[in-house]
Amino acid sequence: MSASAILPQSAATAPDLAAVKTRQQATWAAGDYAIIGTTLQIIGERICEAVDLRAGERVLDVAAGNGNATLAAARRFAQVTSTDYVGELLERGRERAAAERLVVAFQSADAEALPFEDRSFDVALSTLGVMFTPDQEKAAAELIRVVRRGGRIGLANWTPEGFIGQVFKTIGRHLPPPAGVRSPALWGTEVRLADLFPGQAVSATKQVFNFRYRSAAHMLEIFRTYYGPMNRAFAALDGAGAEALENDMLVLIERANRGGADTLIVPSEYLEVVVTRQ
Image (cartoon, rainbow, N blue to C red; front, side, top):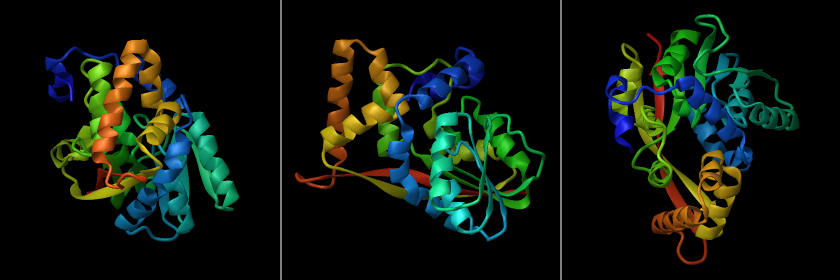
């Protein structure tokens, strides 16, 4: 984690958050995140259980990506609105909902400026999504704003110590993040959540998702091709830089593997969060 990720905004170089957001949008549109996203479906199912989702509730999925939490909520007969600022990902979610004959409203939306009235929803969800917003305080405030009193906000956020947190750090050693922008992995810490949701009832539980691939080389190939942040990182580096990042990533993956010599199973810790709106 870079120093700028943990220093107060005033103590670090003031970032151009609009420019950062534009670059992020292009990053998440690169590759095809849905290829990886569909493997994470169990996280969407778990978060719906964590918030004790009820049939008929009004649910907003924020930074929904290809719709894991969206589909999980719709399968439970909730009234779901699925949002993201990357149109290609919303289209993947729309295709998946249509295949299952699920009724879902899809809408383009910025997590930092949600186009909905105050207290419009019973539940807001975001699995591995809202944590990537440049202005974390604004995104958290929007989640609180659109949920009714007594409603719930369910989040799944990678932790700094977990595998994906280590992926971020590895990429950051080769391609430093924008100065003054806080690390998204801070959403995976209870200390930061307390700052982001002051006055709310916050409960957090560490969970583990297991990435399952044929080998370290197979996982890296999939991530390098389809996972926007890694795809863009490799594209930004010259030949020697890309080779160095590849080597470091293979070492990280192989060190985390618990599947033995014949396959790859990589546990990745995340924080499952339920915020009850006061």
